[in-house]
Amino acid sequence: MADGSTVRAEGSFHIHGDDHPITLSVPIEIHGDVLASKLEFRIPYVAWGMKNPSTFLLRVSKEVDMEVVAVGRLEKQPN
Image (cartoon, rainbow, N blue to C red; front, side):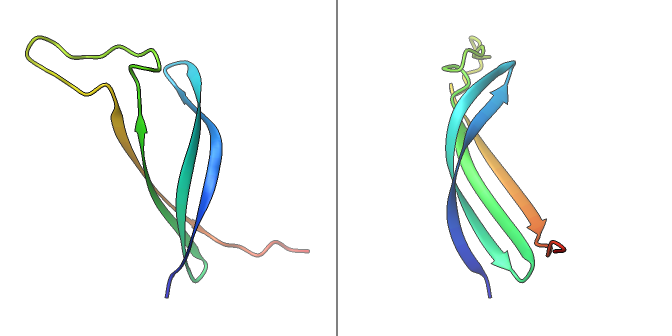
């Protein structure tokens, strides 16, 4: 059985030499002693000062969708 929760994470996303503030809603599932999370967010790279690689024949979005999957294990800390 999985127990789940959502936490709010605030921080900065460092990309292309600059820090950009970001706030994410991070879903967390707990399976025994294993924590797992899969989150998706959008990076507005053009608004953050990076070049749009579009050309005459190639058109790309001004944002990139990012997906992060993370898994960790809970450990008891010694007293």
